[in-house]
Amino acid sequence: MKTFRIGGVHPAENKLSAAEPIKVAELPKVAVFPLSQHIGAPAKAIVQKGDKVKVGTMIAEAGGFVSAPIFSSVSGTVLKVDTVIDASGYAKPAIYITVEGDEWEETIDRSTDLVTLKERRELTADDIKKKIQDAGIVGMGGACFPTHVKLAPPPGSKPEWIIINAVECEPYLTADHRLMLEHADEILVGVTLLMKAMNVGKAYIGIENNKPDAIELMKSKTMKFIHDGDIEIVPLKVKYPQGGEKQLIDAVVGRQVPAPPALPVSVGAILQNVGTAFAVYEAVMKNKPLFERIVTVTGKSLAHPSNFLVRMGTPMSQLIDACGGMPEDTGKLIGGGPMMGKALINAEVPICKGSSGVLLMNDQDAKRPEPQPCIRCAKCVSACPMGLEPYLLSKLAEAHNWDRAEAEDIVSCIECGSCQFTCPANRPLLDYIRLGKSTVLANIHARKAKA
Ligand code: SF4
Ligand code: SF4
Image: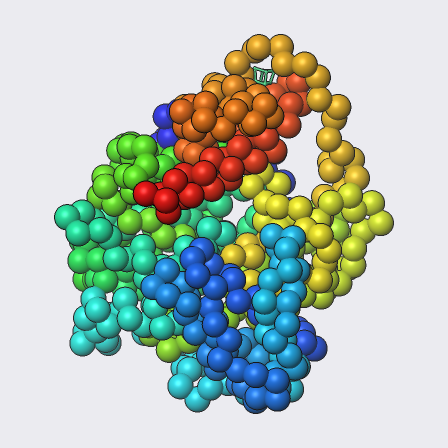
């Protein structure tokens, strides 16, 4: 079975909520929308205190090309434009809306009727890209890169395939799995739209083989869309971090993306998350901007691990309550999964475009064992999917040797945590590497700005 070539680890899967159908989360009393929910320039608020909005009203416009507008997920009155502590742990400008009723913009098609390209032959590639940009769609896997930017490859590059990331290799998370089981048709139409937008005739959907029901269902549905392009489901061996861009391209089409500035499109691939394909369907065929998403709320001590359809701006605490409340032994609250997720300051952080999951880690799992001296076993080197030397990089970052860290290619680290996971001496490798990477990137940007 296909997989990527270099490194990788096998953390316990703990997919506790895999069999839980998606439930619609209750509306919050107040919804909070940070203006930075994507990579790039923050959006600019276009509403002020007292303004009335509906579900789907634009409340912040894109702050540039690499940016995305933000839409209200609720109807009500703008309470204030202030700040909120988001998943990054920092206070960010945000719009607060008091919820009143549930009135949607009339332009949104709320029917569940499937609309395919057969019924919308008039749509051009430019129409599709514009709808995606106007709907504020960003990568739903957590990276939050504006999708319209990914669909504008540099001149001279030639996309050959769309590769859909339906791997969901992070332990615990099951949102993409459930989305495939419950919205396979819409996802596949979304894929055909992406293919048309990029003028490519082939798409692959990579799914790890711990989701056999999703693989079978998606396979059985692809023929239905054959008139709109060739879509192939690719079952993949379970190995973390298969969902990394470079790892998935290697696993699916066997090509290796060179070091930056090369992009996936340099080897012919445009990657999109499966949730993004669904959002593209809704934006183009239903005129629905991105204001809700599927979120897994999970943890070993949680009474009812669940998957929810959540309006953006809903506080995580509300979802935790709907799962039976915060367990007493909660040691850490994580936005995302245990490998690449980030610890949250509190449960009032609002759900944003990139919120794939909320993990409540119990005391026992949250406790980090005491780090011991490195025993030079090289396990971290074998585990690194980017072919780096994690021990060396962490040591260089610890010593603030930024020039050498840059020379050793610290910026290629994808922060997957495989090195730290595998280290028998419990070295906090990723913590130091993250610090080193962000410092080196800042130095590179400062140099470029001066030049
Ligand atoms: S976190 Fe970085 S250094 Fe560690 S294994 Fe992943 S890519 Fe390699
Ligand atoms: S895995 Fe840990 S102990 Fe082994 S070489 Fe790397 S840092 Fe040292």
